[in-house]
Length: 302
Image (cartoon, rainbow, N blue to C red; front, side, top):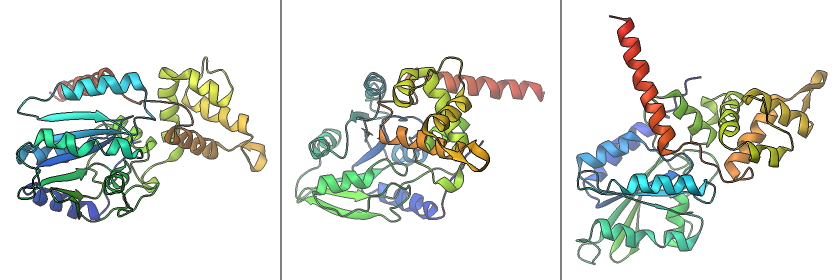
């Protein structure tokens, strides 16, 4: 299933972000620590590099991600601190005020020439939907100014806030890109609830998620649902959850849709445990396979 999701308001959001980029000093890109590559919008990178703006990548929801994998991602991103890419990364939970409070100082290291009353540090918070941008804004300002919810694309317009007399925050809508190039990215974005449900089939997404969990975290599935996973595929996992939880529909058939939603919710909430759906190595393997497939298709058309 190829997934594409680009609500109408995002066209204006993309234009506004490109215009505002000229007037800011640092981009704060909020990422879901469980999918930091698939969840990084290439449009954000494109417009910030055009304006030569440094980027602080926040691997949010790190309390839900596999700690070893998060460490690998931090090493990967922080290796890109060269002048050309000018990236720094930190893992935290925006729900923890103490974690969020670290961010302004980190931004100052990327723009040390700013941060005074005459030259305030201007930070633009960006990212895809439902990664915690509004939660971060509220934590930094220590008051509820941005809407927070469990559905993607709640914020629709840019807003500017004075953090203090020498720092300014600019909140932006969650921004997807018009075409998700890799089907696997669409699936893990949907599993992590960065894409609206109207664009996906929950059961297919849950089966895809279950296949990843079988490969990387089978013990967590067994611990949560109390069944052995040997010999199973993703569809088997969904059926087993339905039987284990007693989910039935008319004719005493198992309710696969309800079981699929259960698995997705348990992953999203952290009830399954600390899980990451991609690693730097698995990401590179996926890109290499996609490139090889493209070359093979090109050869077939010669």
